Amino acid sequence: MGLFDRVSRLVRSNLNALVSGAEDPEKILDQALVDMQEDQVQMRQAVAQAIASMKRLEQQYQQNASQADEWYRRAELALQKGEEDLARQALTRRKTHQETATALKAQIDQQQGQVESLKRNLLALESKIAEAKTKKDMLKARLKAAKATEQIQEVMGKVTTSGAMAAFERMEEKVLSQEARSQAVAELAGDDLERQFAKLEGGTDVDTDLLALKAKMGGGVLPSASQPTAALPQGGDVVDGELEELRARLNQP
Image (cartoon, rainbow, N blue to C red):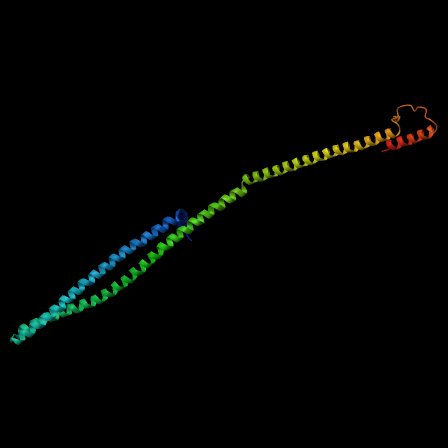
């Protein structure tokens, strides 16, 4: 492969890629339909010209056929009058017109075939144009739908990959963490309050029992561990020992 061929192929491929990239489907569809309609106009003109030409040939044929009949009638008249030479000239003219009419008839037959072919092609082109109009509208609608879908997918891709969604997720985690901390603080405050009320309720029972014990013993005050033990009545040694044992138990963990 020569260098020129390689360069030529490279240039053609780049030009084709440039043209393909610059093509707008909607504009191409509109232009293609315009081109087809221009072809339709030209074909209509061609059919009209072919029909007009055939009509002229038919007129010439009719004239020559009529002239041939007229010269035949004149030849008969000349022969009836004894003018044989004149009759011969009339028949010569008749033959000329007959030959011309025969040639015109062949042209008319050929022209008629061409006209019929042009008419069929024109009808086929009109059918294709009608189909192209319908297909153009459908393709444009599909193109718009495809562009809209592509734009939506691009937006969705940007939302998924950008930091916007990540920011929302981070804020959601912070809100959940804050809610969890608030709930934990509330639970701890509730537990502390329950313990305080339990302590108050427990202390009330002990105080009540202490008052009852004092009333039973006649309002006397029990000696504490730091106070010296006074002389007790008979049996005081036994009571003193029990008190010491009670203090030891209370001081045990």
